[in-house]
Image (cartoon, rainbow, N blue to C red; front, side, top):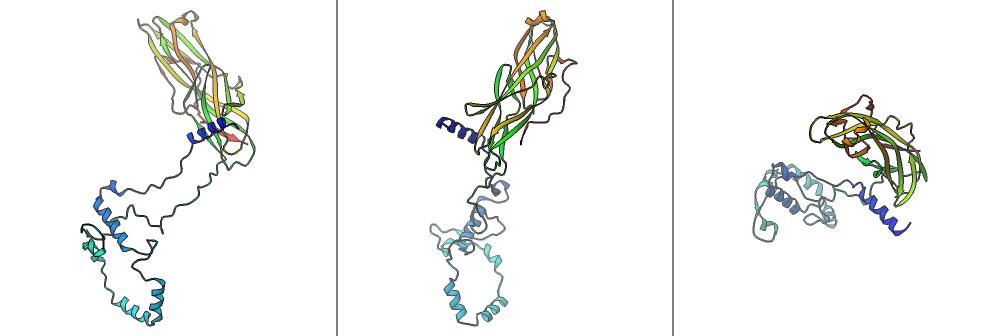
Length: 331
């Protein structure tokens, strides 16, 4: 592998990278139930507690030596039980504002209080929030990226798929089969004084697989698969000006079979489709009255629907309506 091809592969994997799940806590500011001051005060009160189960250091709690010294004096259980019986609930007093100077908070004196009905936001509790130090392994053997509704113009080419091999691959070589839904598309103008038909037919299709700039394999579609990939448009223009027209029609599903590809992890393949289409006009002497802007194949037809503007579909247009969607199978 050359430096140039390595950079191409890296750029392609970054372009088609699936981002990791981000930590997105709920934002209480957008609810309108709490003000910024309330949320900030709740966080300040929690920090000033210096509780050992929420901070890495103990500040206002007994150390282990102090706890042992208390136990060594004896009778701690009795005094503790008496304290529990006579304990007073001071939970309500938490909301009583106290000057910040009582907590040795530097700066101008403000009043602090603890309202636990306010959510604790933007506060890191290292005991309850954990972050993994590893990335979850992707168990899919490969990532298949489909470019939907891609127009492949007659005698032109377009990238329609990308295949990225993942680390979970279990074979050094796979034979892949790709199924893709295909449509036909045309747009142009009808010149004045025309009445007739125009027929669009798919003549050939080739799928080329590239590793970087190196051609790995090519697959040609058999003539039997595309023999019915054609449609006819009925059109008429009795005006003195040109009439624009366009049409899209689903033609069927095409299968590219038994494509051998090496499956070294991190390999990224590009699939380029080329097609040849024919255009015929009836009556033939009126061919100059049709101006075609483009004739194309709709690869991976997904969101484009059958439609005709400025014309009508003829009776011999394809009636296939089962779009299987684009997918890949490896064996």
